[in-house]
Image 1 (cartoon, rainbow, N blue to C red):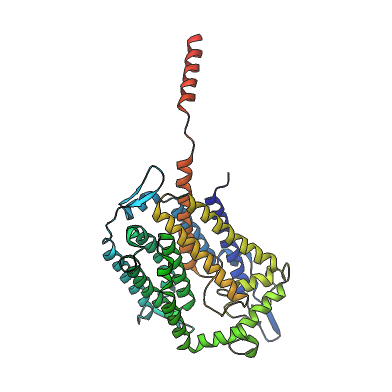
Image 2: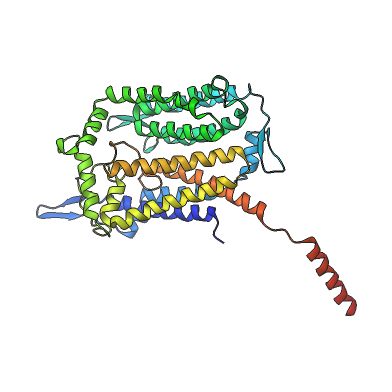
Length: 419
């Protein structure tokens, strides 16, 4: 029988395979051939298999496999030793309300230092005017990706150890809001889209952990003011808002990106131009391998490709909901909610942006858009959900009936006696 964990594994495999092929297709370029003409750099099976993205795919699948074999219940108990399960399947935490704040502060400080490393003179890297990468030589990664998933785990932990007081504004909600707000703000300075995503996921997780909705609503006005300030003080962000309102008023400047994306989608029709036959990737559509890969998919595979991508994400989310609803560990439940919310909201934001329904943001399509850090960390977190499903399957597996065993033993004994 196909379990929710199997669905997640198959969907991840399909998304990574499709992403590897489509990133290679989007990377096709027209190269000069002598003085007589031009030729297209073809994409072959060897070029795909030996590409960097294939290595990222292999690494993501390895991490998925390793994470799916983790003893998640034991790790959850280790992280929250006071977490106990009653006979009715209810999970309770007996942490004292004053505990956990020091460790939470340490987590926030560690992640803040990691995020600040993008400005370090040696390891920090600036690409296209944005300081989002840390690396040495050819190796680099985005600290915001690490912080995004680490914050999900940290909020899940906080929701358990501070659960008894989370419904109190000052004692429970305010400390986590200040810490998470600091991290979200550090990310939003360079990457507003990811910062908004992280803030939304934190809100969903805290609501699931037991925080009061009207308490969370108190943070909406200052968060909206911070977003407005980041837009108002950044010329390119303000131009993106103007381009969203009327992209055709700026066809050659800040509306160019959105127009080219909509052209690519419109040219796809039902089944697309064919794999590798898209035109917008040849110097027209910027960021075609990363943030706007969905537009290339729509142009080359058409509406069919868009439905396949949306269906794969829907399958992951439905399977995640099934796993979370059956989980008896509070920390694992909250972690599952965070993983599902992150992937679902990130995919939704990307598709909204690419189709012109929202202002342009630098946010990738999970497990599809080029990016080794994102692929590997996303796959690893989904592997934890698979491990949760495996633990549930082990608990629900039927045990042999003692009566039946006794009956078989009696029958066997009778046969032996007759013999």
